[in-house]
Image (tube, rainbow, N blue to C red; front, side):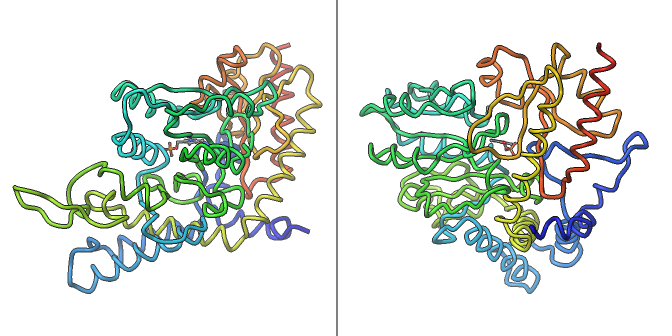
Length: 408
Ligand SMILES: *Cc1c(COP(=O)(O)O)cnc(C)c1O
C-alpha cells in the first residue's frame, strides 16, 4: 500500500491550513495547480531565516553573512540534485516560472537574428506565450504553434513539420495546467535536437507531481516556481545548459552579477551569478530547499502514484454526473481536471462550491488559447495534491450534485 495512504493524517497535520474552516465548513483545497499549501517546516524555515540567520549573502566577512551565504548556496545544491542537474552553475534563482521564461526570452532572444522562429504549443500558459510574443515584436521573429487534438494530445506530426532552418527555440509545457496532459517531452526534445534546436520545458506543473531529471531529458532550459511545489512564493528556478547560459547576455544588471565595474567597462560574474542581479531571495531559496526535502522524504514516486489514484477516482465519479464534460483525456495525465456541467456557468458552480468549503478554480486558467480551442470561456478546475483524499473528492461530487439541483 502507498505510504501516503497509511500516513495521510500526519501528512495533513503538516499543513495547518487544511484544518481551517471556511463558512463553517471544512476546507477542501482543490486549487493546487494555482498554488500549493505550505508544510510547517517550510513556514518555520522562513521564520528561522529572519529570526536567526538574517544577513545579506556573498558580501560580508561577518559570521551571519557567512551562515546566510552557505544556506543559500546549499539550497542551490538541493535544487540541482532534485532535478538531476550536473552543476550548481546551471541553477539560477528567479522569482518564478514567469520570470525564468522572460529571462530566457530576453537573454537568449538577444542572440537571435530577425526572421528566426520560435515554436510553442496551443496548450501553453500565458507565461509561455506572451514573453515570446514580445520577443517576436522586438526582434522581428515569428511564433509557430503546435496544435492539440480535442483529447488534449499534441499533434507531433504537425510539430515535426514546423521546423525550418530559421527555427531557434521550442518552448513547451511538461504538464498542461488546464488539460492535465503530460506531454512526451523527451520525444519533443529529441525531435528538436535532430534539428539542432534547443528546448525550454515549462515544469511549473510537473516538478511537484512526477520525477524530473533534466539531464536524462536533455532539456536545454527547465523552469519552475517554488510556490507550486510547497515552497514560498517569489522564488523560482531556471535550469540551463552552461554552453547556452554562457553565450547569453545578462537579463538585469546591478550587484552580484558583476565581476568588476569601472566607468569604462564592466565585466560580469561567472554562472549562475551573471543572471542574479541584486540581493537574491536567500530566505526564499532556503525555504524552497526545505520544501524539496519534504517532498523527497515522502518520495516523488509515491506522490505520483497516490495522485494518479485520486485522478482516477475523481474522473470515474465525475463521469456519473449527467451533462458533465471533462476537457482533455490524454493517455498520460497529471492530477488536473477541467470541466463544465451542462449549461451552468463555471463561475456560478465555483461560487456555490465555495460556499460549501470547496476551493476550485474557475476561468481560463491563464490558457485562453485552450478555451478558444473548445469554443468556451472557461472551465471549473479541480487540481489535486498528495494531501488530498478520496473523501474530499466525494464532497466535491456531492457539491456538484447540489449545484446541479439548484439549476434544474
Ligand atoms: C503557474 C504556471 C506558470 C506561471 O507560474 P508563476 O509562478 O505564476 O510564474 C507557468 N506555466 C504553467 C504551466 C503554470 O502552471
